[in-house]
Image (cartoon, rainbow, N blue to C red; front, side, top):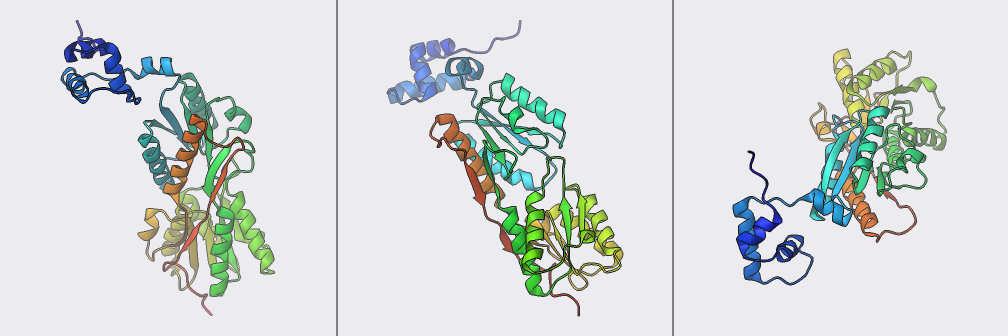
Length: 337
């Protein structure tokens, strides 16, 4: 017969105290327990290998101490730092994080949300791939959107200011002397990339530059897509002198294609990305990029969820905007005369 797991009653008997005393020690809820008694209980727990029954506790408290983090692409180097910022903050409050990777798949995303509902998760952090605000509202638990989205009017969100980050990147290229700037626009079914597109068109308007559709290439946020987009732009009769890519993954793909085509960066063409992932330091030359505070996004999202869980957040939905920062490296220079 398999050995049963030790119970709180076993701990109480081993320590020579009551069940309620063991419960007070475990919960640490501020009720006074003599130091010697605490030591006896902790020793009994260690000797018996007792594990707190979270399921039973959740039935009493109506909390599972579990947060679900739903990311669209676990292979994108942007997300690990976001996840770490959220996890580090959540764990300090006694919560655990369950990671879900949707792979930009609407069905998987909806299944994860259903799992969170069935298992009574206390909160959800999500970068939506296809789910709507109405579908998200089916989850009664607090929710925070990772990223700034215009299609979620009544849900808390935390994200980087990609619009002004794009303007800053393009202004930087303009000051270097570039006027014909290509744009590798990352797109997904969710409509991601709109802020960058708006920033690009606003930049052209401010600089009295024409909007040339051939200089805009829309592709998925993938390395190979960056390679193909670069090839498309360089095949133009009059190629750009600089390229702004929606994220570093696309920019790195473009740089790989440049090397294969014999295009010398930045002598022949400048490239700037966005995100400041670790790989952007490893390229040759190192990639100029707009840095996003990825860890801070996760941390702020976690803080907001904890306030919602504890009922201390303001009634009005929160929109936390974190600015981008230009990181100037060697992939950008004035255009060749």
